[in-house]
Image (cartoon, rainbow, N blue to C red; front, side, top):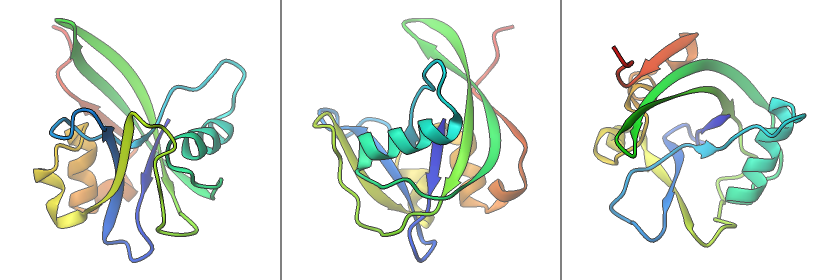
Length: 140
């Protein structure tokens, strides 16, 4: 589960990255659903654990078939994306290895936000009308 979290003015999206690698890529907040956990419970847990945000309302947006290279191999991971409506723009990282920050929408392409397919539909505003995206290249 990944959260597309826009600020109160709808001008920036929340991202996180490894604090030890400031020049590395940026992810959307979220993580794996635990066995027996609902998407709603996963969203609440991840937001609380990673950025100190209290559980908030959300709207399911789409699924991404995410193909990526890891340790020289193509991997695949389906990811569910929800739009989260934060009660405040004040966020902080609860995990010392993560850094979170608001990224202005006009600058998304220059900030290393992944997956690029999701970044691009946020940038052009079409994320509200999507049902399925493919990110990366499937293994042929």
